Image: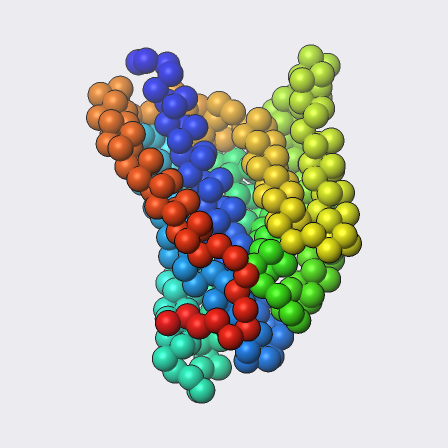
Amino acid sequence: MEWYLPVIWAGLIGIAVLLYVILDGFDLGIAILFPTTKDEGERDQMMNSVAPFWDGNETWLVLGGGGLWVAFPTAYAIIMPAFYIPVILMLLALIFRGVAFEFRWVAKPKHQVWDLAFWLGSTVAAFSQGLILGGMIEGITVVNREFAGGPFDWLTPFTVMCGVGVVVGYALLGATWLVYKTDGKVAERARGQAKMLLLGLMAFAVLVSLWTPYAHPRIAERWFTPSNMMLLWPFPLLTAYCGYMVWKRLHGQHEFTPFAFTIAIFVLCFLGLAISNYPFLVPPSLTIWDVAAAPSSHVFVLIGVSFLLPMILFYTAFVYWTFRGKVRADSGYH
């Protein structure tokens, strides 16, 4: 087997997952913040700030899941049964969120049920993603290259903490996005919310950073052996610096930079998780080479992705450029 093909595909899937977390994270975060105001105009303004983007943002989830199925079928066959319940909850919640987004506008003025569905669907989706993340960090029971655990192995205090942490993190992305894309009361309230959410996210980051090496010797060895510490110490320092910059820019009345530094925090946390687990795709037992498809499959699909990925990136950039600028209170979805 060409050793580099699984590495390329792991990188592509990792990029797709990271882009999904960032791009869909902020519109899920806006829905998580929905109950913080009861004003109809403010809720409309919040939804309008993501109206052109939210459905396209989910493209990256499809690419990540499809890539896992094609490039690492053994991993897909293990991970899916290990997380059937949170995956199903996430997908149903995303469906409810999408339906609520469309139906809320046509159901006015009696749309309270869709407001609830928009908030609940987004919150459950974010929490489910945190459960899956926590379960992957803790590891999956595998025997003879098959899932050998129980249906609720993913439900532990650590995974619940990760679920809450993802909800807080997405809410921070949503709040800093509102600071950047809206004005008036919505932006000012979001600025205050972002300060508190930042403190919460950094607390979760510290807790996970301490919990995982304590509970898992393989992660402790990766981060705390003397040779590795010399190479990896910039990551926690850069994360702390980005958190400080978000705090500073929120107090300095900046608009875009709090959102940019929040994205940087997510990127650094994602890289930290990758460092902790590489080369395991099914921690703690199966590497990317153990679960990879045949090289011919990798090459065949990689040819298609080499054409498709630039198109998706161009479309995404085009949409964000086209709908640049502030979303005012009188902006409409239709």
